[in-house]
Image (cartoon, rainbow, N blue to C red; front, side, top):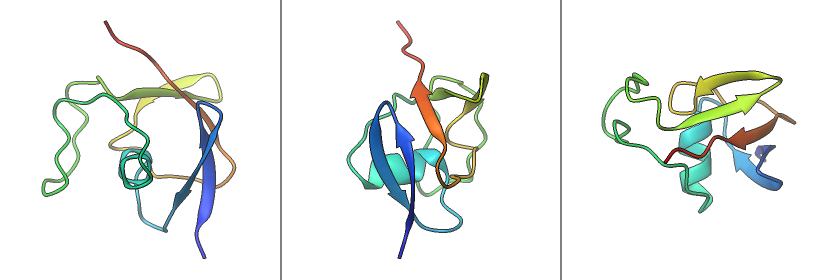
Length: 77
C-alpha cells in the first residue's frame, strides 16, 4: 500500500524511496522540468521543477516524497 501527498489539490500516491517528481509523473501529474531523466541520478540543476512545501521551495526531482505533504508547483514562464 502506498502513501499519498497532495500536489496542487490532488492526491498523489507514492512508494517509499520515490521523489516528488517520480511519484507525480507516475500518477499522471506533470511538473515542468528540463534536467530530470528517469535513468539518471537527480541533481536539481535547472530548478524548473520547483515546488513549495511548508513555505519553503525545493526541486521536486531531488525531494523525497513524504506522507500528507501539501505541495504547490511553482509555475515558470
